Length: 168
Image 1 (spheres, rainbow, N blue to C red):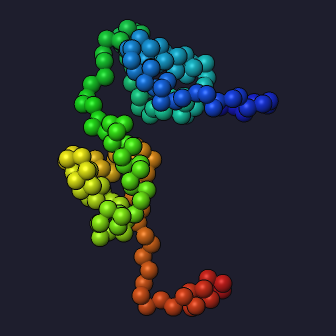
Image 2: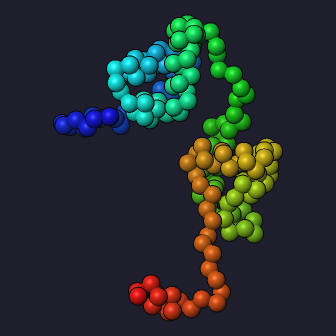
């Protein structure tokens, strides 16, 4: 997107999550947004900008283009989304956000950092939810939390020598 001159637009009243939910309520709305993205692509807006604004991959836009070629705009409405709904509810998101920020030791875990296995164990104990380690890792990513790992520190290192080495 080209940077324009002028004052920045006021966006503090825009709730992105509400807008996303609203778009997904009706297939026609979602289809209209896909059509608008393809119109923008035709009007020389870069694929990267379209993907960034809509939060989709290049592959998604490619598939939309293919759908238009084969079925026309009605192809967007004809084929609803497939797949299983995520088990990550808003309640679980809030639970994880509030508790993962704290140290695992607060919940009587011996580990110093949260990882996929510990999140699985935590969810099983708190809510009775059993998920795989990979699902726990993906859920952490979806709520913008990363798995933290401490940097390794070797016992034989002398801090004074390390500091002198960094200076030279």
